[in-house]
Image (cartoon, rainbow, N blue to C red):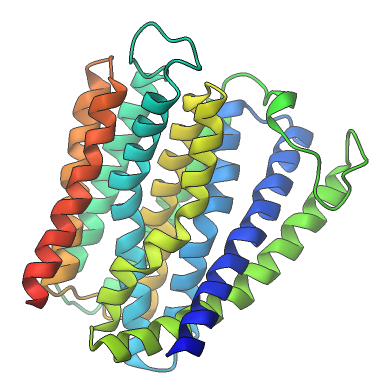
Length: 333
């Protein structure tokens, strides 16, 4: 068990480090391509920070050889949006509260494009509701519906890029990790760093999935339950770290764009993989995670539609994750 835990945390740490390189490289790719700030947060950075959870689902459902491994993939596909919709937004709210004085803010208002975020939440809610509904029924052509989720994400990326705002500010990008002495690294070096990071993430994610299966057996938990509770909290850490960094800089717009974009990825790409390669049928725990996620998104959508969000109210969203953990604890007992 000690060796399993060591490999589990080592592979998770490897994913985090590789993601830092990925995000750093992808931000320079965005700069070289002259993309807008919001597009960098909601598309490029979001893709990088959502990559670990998506990679876990990919390795589990595509390359998994047992039903338990495929269950881990389904659990990861449901757990990622749950963590982001509850703890992700709560972290931004708490970070704003702790940095309130340092940012010299007169109020606790969150400075973001409310209309854009409200629209994103509505789109996510519609896609996620379809994702949950498909988990309740079985029919012959269901695997083909995975294509719908791929098309939805492609349209989302197209919209974010074409409706993006100002160019990505130079001061928000650290020096390229593999060429730190270059003030303006070329697109080649940025892409090279991205591809190397993706290779490391792929190997580490495969190891991570296998250790989740071992931990689930040791705890006598269903594999998807382990993936729901352990995998997302670990693999969504890049979004949390990005949020903390950007909030400390007073750039909650980028932090929330990163989380919103990662949520759209989690609602589409892992879902498509799960629908393609598994029966995609939910038990009570998976259904509970879906319901809690939709409640969180509906709540966030209501907040953003009002056009004024208090960081203290945003922080309270994390209570919904506590409710989910309480439900799981009651189910286990």
